[in-house]
Length: 381
Ligand SMILES: Cc1ncc(COP(=O)(O)O)c(C=O)c1O
Image 1: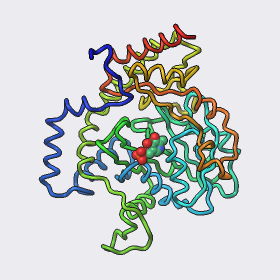
Image 2: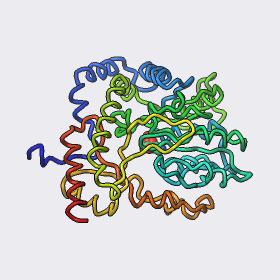
Image 3: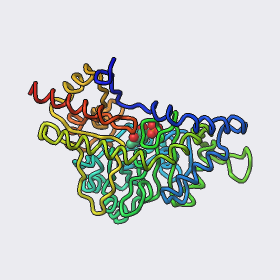
Image 4: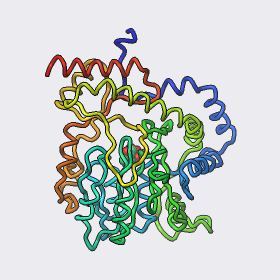
């Protein structure tokens, strides 16, 4: 198989790991030799490094981004009887985390372009039970946080953020997750800062939330007394090996984000002539706009499912993020919180497609993906 026919996976980090292996191996050996394999000094070093990079007062490592959301919601005092307004266009964990703490997610529509919570739809969904709003920052830009913070202040609500995809995204100098009471990061392998497995982090500037979160991640154990429990928490630890890997990746983060931007610009240029059948990513207006960090390169396109099959037949992996709004998820649809119409989310879910975009992707591979899109729309439309 030559380079022009080799499959292009939707994601691969294998090449970077191979390139960096000597340094990674040294770090892994250090962890192995230390005898401390979880929640040790390397994880503390990672927490300090992420706190410094994001400006968070507290960065608390846990087992994955979903746990970070559950722990954040509990630590912020969300529980049974509360409603939390979340966007209907997001990964399932945004809503399932709310249900895990016994509260009810209320699903509202999003804005075109950012696919983030529409502040007007959110305000219309506020009831006397609403305790918090939790916008999500998806793909390459943040939600309109200034407008959402004004809303949460005006209505006396907590502002939490599902910033799982938001590493290095900032608006007005404030990192994703730190506009309100707290946010999270996911280090799932495909993420902009991905681990070699699963890991996640909670970010907050609030000392009380941080203290509570630290107890909750360790079964609820009182920090003053060993094996003393006043509440039921979780077992959500970040392994030292993941922390070592993430510390290494953190050193490369800026250059990797730069590479993601280069690839996105390459896609933008090559796909522009396919408008209006294909729409490339664009920045939605926001009171305080964020920078663009390409975790995902998401196009909207006509005949999306046919295109997926065509690309797949040519060995190109893609992901339909997200193939249905949360209001259409069988487990969520019967909930009262799924009552609001979500036309923007529904329309996007029929047209959205993420193309391969990761630091290991070569220019030639991106060009081949674009050539296939041209062939699909040129030859078949
Ligand atoms: C928006 C969003 N929320 C939550 C999560 C959950 O993170 P994790 O997969 O690390 O549990 C993810 C990532 O998968 C995500 O993209």
